[in-house]
Amino acid sequence: MKCAIVPVTAYQQNCSVLICEETKRAALVDPGGDLPRLREALDELGVTLEKVFLTHGHADHCGAADSVRQAFGVPVEGPQREDQFWIEQLPDACRRMGFPVAEAFEPDRWLNDGDTVSFGAQTLDVLHCPGHTPGHVVFFHQGERLALVGDVLFKGSIGRSDFPRGDHATLIASIEQKLLPLGEDVVFVPGHGPTSTFGDERRSNPYLKR
Image (cartoon, rainbow, N blue to C red; front, top):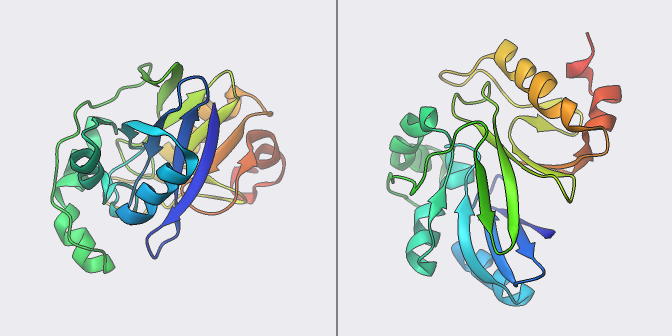
């Protein structure tokens, strides 16, 4: 499996294109906007979109999810149901953030801790990692040692926890109990900014030093 990153929206959110090299099938993780750019990226990569995966319900991560679903005829999977209230606020959130208006939608599948998602010949584990939002999930590919962590963890930082139903202690617990134990060699793609490894963040991230 390969991963290509396409920054979208004014927030330069990392929309990841997961590619099954065996089947040339793909999944989009967190398509927050810019549908034409995403369509162009898929064409350039020579892949067929099969699914959309969402880490959480904030507009910069899911704003284009329903548009992608309609344009490509593919299902949307995730986040965990506790983020439903965020997706229901999507029209207002888009207006506040200056995004094109997007309607609220229902994912084809809500995800829970311990679930798996699949596309092509690839399977990823689902970890429920609340704290930034209550229904935030992380996708982990064991073979590639790759995690798509949304806004839980960043290079040198962590996600905000001052949104409705966010919680700092819960966020730290998600990182320390769910993510770091996956292994220091795991590379992660955050929702914004550069990639890093769990090992590097364990050693140098000031928010994880206690």
